[in-house]
Image (cartoon, rainbow, N blue to C red; front, side, top):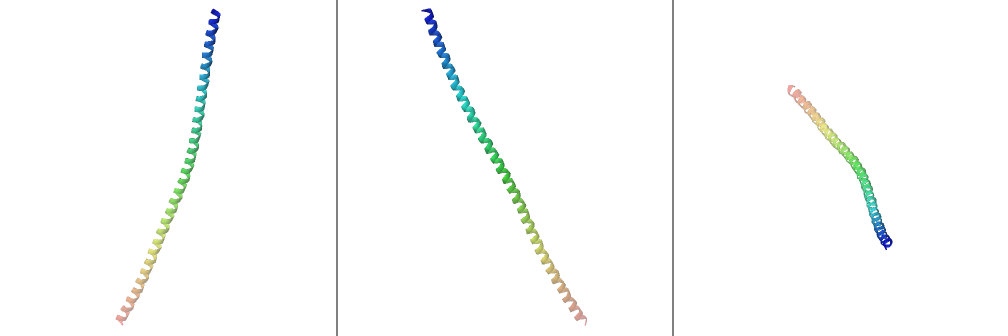
Length: 112
């Protein structure tokens, strides 16, 4: 009877130990799946980060190009305004020369 009780007790412990090992294996599988899921999420985030970096670089280049184009446009507008001012000044100078000649002619006529 003693040997039978001992064998039953050993069998019970063995079954409990096997269940514990099975539970541990299941827990380990869950942990491995969680780690795999975490790694996948991390990789997705890295890809998203790289994509955002590229987009930022592109937008920065676009912004710099627009700034240059805007400056060029401003310079062209300034040049056009200066050219217009120069034409007006030349016309005024021409008009003044014509008036000066008229005045000189009148002075000559008065002196005669």
